[in-house]
Length: 608
Ligand code: GCU
Image 1: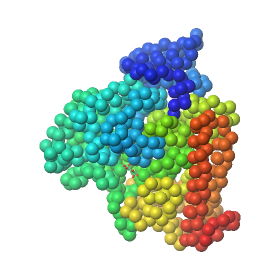
Image 2: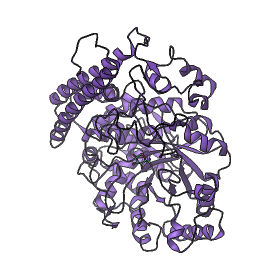
Image 3: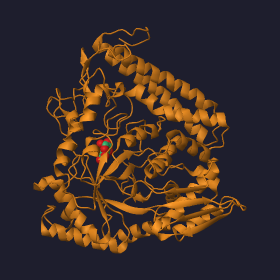
């Protein structure tokens, strides 16, 4: 992450006083003969214009934060050698472009793979102001503007809302403000009960007053706080269901408390039965969010945003777009992505997400999606992301959140150029490796949309039966004849939650795209795929191919001139990825061979 801040030579030893001042510093870093004027046009707000004048100088115009985003866009182009048109105008597609940190106040990070928390330690704020400014700079450089600093699972005593913590929270907000970054806090729905109120019922006047007073106190300390993020009635977290209320009752109560200050309530939709009986064939977990929220469409206050994970399960390597993102037409929505590689290799395996995100953004309807959020992949490791190449996910997420039309290969190449000094052929080799890394990971882990073959709890490494008899509703039901779940009208009916055109695309296994086949269908191993292979042969082939591709990836990485300390970390993690890719390949293929008894037509080794 830091490589390109040092390349840009931006002095962060002192705090900038405003986005404009930072914009000037950023532009001054280019070179003494680089001429650029700044013009603040408040009406432009976050947008900017860059004019390349005939005398070779530039003019960047924008609102308060717009000039900052313009300055960064300009120097990103200069340093990555991109041609700029004579004039360029740019406005963010989504007003809230958020990073959600899952940091706990004890200093741990839930699903964190880059060291401990950047903000907390031992129950208190504990941070390095310089690193905060660096983080502000990373965010501003790619247009990200909201930082939620604490875990959605608010573990007591993470009471950022309390008087004791507010001065420090306000000091942190001050640090981020010149970078155009506003803070957000995750809150616990039952928090009033820790303050002498016997209930957290959203319709109870005492509860409402507690939240109103709390919001007033918090906004006195941090007037530009972006709002509160809430995980309610989800995986054991408290919520309105306890009181027989629905999620509009809960979210709107909080929304009224923050509305006078322009705050938002970002309410997560990750609600499902996490105590399912595996024998129960009626309940299909991906259906849950739609069942809970679609009846409430149109009932949420204007300052509520429902934050929906991109797929109906939980950040698997391949999931269809959540039906809520397509169907909740009268509700403000945010799509939630996960930079932290929880199910996608723990920042040990290389997994570049932008090809996956492009598929999602391409399907999103234009109108009612107002925000994007991504679970952070950052931590206290020196390089911020654990794996140096995982930084590409943070960087490209920002570019897409600003402009979802951004081309994946361009974005990845830009990151490489800002991070390393590579010859063009090395740059191309790394770009192509990164862009294909998701497909490779998918092949050796859980291809064809099957998902969930991962070890339970820590979510790293293969365990094909690990979740089969568990409570979490994540089953593939492989037996000796067939695998997958029928989610069409003849099965659980999940597919019926989608618009008709979408249903047509996936309903028939003969025409359903292969990559989603076992998400939507239960099929015998002898099923003929479109290319003539049997399903079981395709399962074997994908796993073998994934492993072979990983070996090729390792060769390429060894040949690239990464500087230290990156090289050492990249190559040692690659060794682990190689080992694990082989484990995945052999364990999953053996699992299916033992069940199906089918031989590999190519006679490769599968264990009996
Ligand atoms: C996943 C993850 C949890 C997290 C949850 C969420 O289930 O494993 O650690 O709390 O998602 O998004 O709330």
